[in-house]
Length: 127
Image 1 (tube, rainbow, N blue to C red):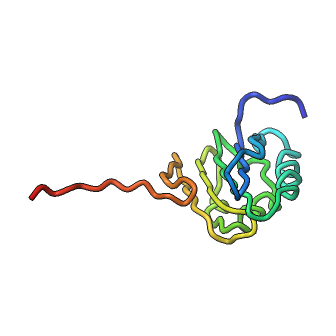
Image 2 (cartoon, rainbow, N blue to C red; image 1 turned 180 degrees about the horizontal axis):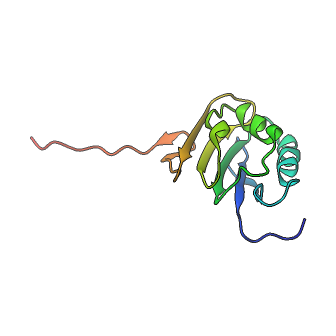
């Protein structure tokens, strides 16, 4: 596969579960390359259980995404990955070996959950 600088498709960051240091940060152009999905699964298999996975799609990641690529995220609790379509956004935060995840899907996917902490706005009432 030729070097692809577009970052189109899946952008994945894998973090050590113990200290959240970066194991790798890669992108898989599942829009353009049919073997990108296979490579993503191959890289994922090497990761130990407990690895934190953060993934987001830029532009389009569904065109050449294989069933095995979707299944990989489903095994971590993803449900909305089956809805992926042309130019649809998707963001994911999960842990390998667990079936609990946070994901967002739509025209624009954003979420404010980072490493299990939720950002909450609170109004303080003056007395």
